[in-house]
Every structure is written in C-alpha cells, then in structure tokens.
Length: 153
Image 1: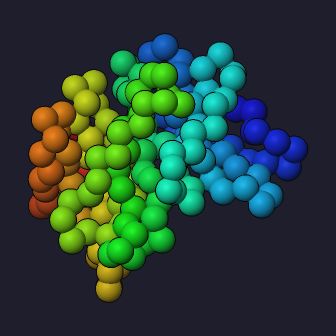
Image 2: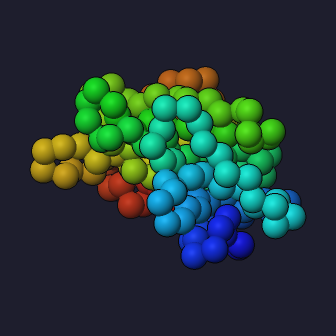
Image 3: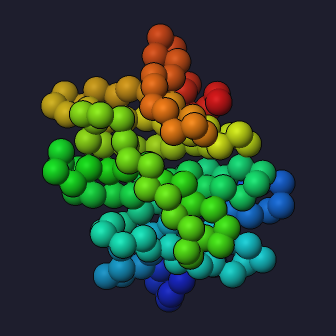
C-alpha cells in the first residue's frame, strides 16, 4: 500500500471481498490517520477533534471499524468509530462503554456489529466489548479473553 508522503509509513489491517483495504498511515511530523485504499487511492481520514485515529477492520459492505484517539484520559477517551462510504464525510463516533477510557482494537462483521478490546487503567487490564448494530454496548466473550474476542464475531 502506498504511503501518503515520502518517508511515510502505512499499515494495512484488513481487506474485504471488493478489495477495499482498511488501515492507517502517517509520516514525519504527521499524526497517524485512518486510511482506506480502494484502487490504490488512499484518502486520509481525519475526523475532527482526534489527534490521530486508526482503521482496524472492514466488512463486505465497506463499513470500517476504527478508533478515534483522545489522550487516553477519562476526560478525553479513545472512542469506537464506524466509517462508511463516502469515507471522508461519513464517520460515526460510537463512543465507548461507560467508565472505559481506552479502546484499543475494533473488528466489524457484515451485520455492522463491532467487537474489540478495552484497556482499563490502572493495572492495564484488558476487557472485550461488543457494540451491536442497534447501538447497544455489552460484554463479548468475557470468559474466553480479549484476544479471542477480536477474532470471533
């Protein structure tokens, strides 16, 4: 995947059946930004009020699950995002589960349900979460652990 600028970097995270690739990219002095490659033309997706953000997954409809980064504090937490075509103008800030300041990873299925990992401070404990297409937060596979939650929707 081509980066945005000389000496930049890009990280592809997922690809769907239409070969749309979701990931993130950045460069020297530029924050990382969620990126979608379609026909190798990468728009840099920078929703307002986020220092940087990542796209983690895409489904067959082209919906993308990602993270809008705050500074990781309770006053400015990381939040779950759903981006849909046209990506530059269709970013939904889904928020986060209550009292959880740090969303780390998110995956999305073809129904639009999202599942991911939360980092809860102090102690750096990780918990899984699920956000369904009806807008309801809940626990996901809590007994199986978070790493597995990001692989099984």
